[in-house]
Length: 185
Image (tube, rainbow, N blue to C red; front, side):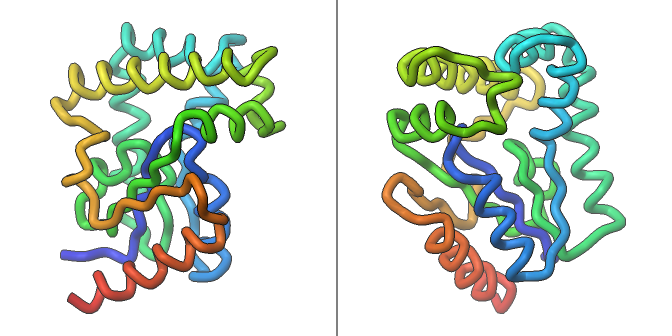
C-alpha cells in the first residue's frame, strides 16, 4: 500500500536538506530527519560526524534505533518527507528518491555549508572530499553488516536524480511531478 510519504535519500551533499525544505513548503508536508538526530548525538559526544559513524559501527544498537525511529514515525503519520539515508528501507511504502551528485561538487557544497561546521570542520575542499569518501564507505559497510542492503543500488528507488548541475527548485519540481505519477499508478 502506498503512503503519502517521500523518502529522500542520496549522496552526501546532494541537496537532500534543501530539496526537502522546498518540498515540505510546496506540498504542505511535515519532515522527519534522521541526519539531524545523528548530528545532535555527535555534537553531544564532542566528535565529528565521521567519528560518530565509526562509533556507531561498533554500537549497532544506535544505528538500529535511528533507523527504526523513521519506521515508527511512519506508522502514525502521513504527508511527510523522510530525509534519511535509509528512509526507503525503513518505509518501503513510500515514494523512494535518490539524489546523486559529483564528488567534487559535493565536497565544495559541504565545505561552504555553515551548518556543517560544528561536526565537519575542514581547512580545504580536498579534506572535505576525503571525509565524504570515508563516510560513504563507512556507511556502506555498516548498512551491509547490519541490514544486508546497499543504499547505492539504484534499483531500490522509484526515482534517481543527478543534482550536480540542477538548482534545488528544479530537483523539487521533478520529484513532485514523478511523485504524482507514482500515486496515480
